[in-house]
Length: 246
Image (cartoon, rainbow, N blue to C red):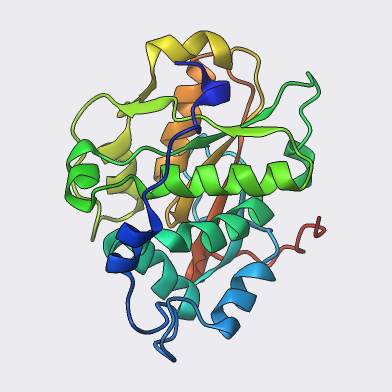
């Protein structure tokens, strides 16, 4: 698989998406629209901020998040991920694009920036009917290209063993659960050597998943990555100064 073209996939027809839309805003429950003006503004005004779990897991790269995981943002992410509100991928992807740090947007080697989504387990993709993080990565890549940043989403990671449900697990248990669980697809490994990549996920909690993803891409020869997420759990949102808006 060529990581530079991995995001070129046809979308679902709008008529099918309309069948999946809620009658009220998925963020705040108001009105009769999937995304009200106030919640849309909350996403579109997002600015990437450095965040750091406490304690950070070994190997966690610098992480930037667009918003705290609370309120409307939490509702929108859950609607997209668990309830099939697929057209929310565009607005959520714009927030994710805002979290990609400015220092990563123009790699020194001149090649397009690669957004590497954290993969969902196969059973979760089958149950949901889509891979939510890959969808958000493609939407973020489109937004960055519109802003003049050469960028592609590249689904180069895959699970290589079963991972237990992480709900309710603490930081140490999550690290043990994920250790060695991800690897780069063999066909994509050559395209990662020396590349600067940004790992992307919808949410950062303990940072264990992003640390494992960073281990896998650097083992394949990628440069030390950064990571970007739509949201970070409130108790882990850092007090660092926001990154400069692009």
